Length: 289
Image (cartoon, rainbow, N blue to C red):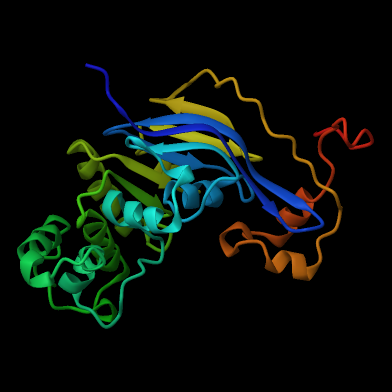
């Protein structure tokens, strides 16, 4: 029986309009993510990873194209609808844990359910089971400041599972951890994958990506390589959007309008601000190198 796609991306484009200039972050992506799969997304700074992460997490919308999550094209949803999708279908794991310092382990795990109007008294047993699952059954009443970095990330993993999401979306999940603790968190992710969970992990770390069965490498807003089980896959027939830029310099004011997660390196942004492709409207534009 064929495995269904959890994610379907069709000609996905994202352009940041800064007024005098346009910065293309995603230039026409096409790919699917199957249910129960483990996918890593990699690429250098400025490749579009952060932008793609935000769109996959329903934190932002594409400029053009389609993003199907389950049976819905979420690219066309309202803010209210996107909020509902985030709460019900996506479990987030962040590099910096993003725990609430005033809450204990159980209360932090319960947070996604709280936002859905579900009282902790009705879901305490559920949260306790999740804490046990990630090895924190003896830390239920501890607050984040009483936990190590690895323990805090375990809480974050349990929290991501609280709403029984369609997929887990992780942003550099081991970026703040030492090597030993990193392996422990990756082992937990492996276990979740073995249970049939769908995982999408954005990372710079080759050791993290090596755990995934598929690695998508981005470059300049396009898929550079798509590797499944160690083998390169044929590239989709993409029609990349032209990187049309109308100025060579970005002012400091312009830079302030670029989302923080896209400003990984101001010089990368500045480099992007150039004419990179000839078009009919810009016959003197430089060809992309």
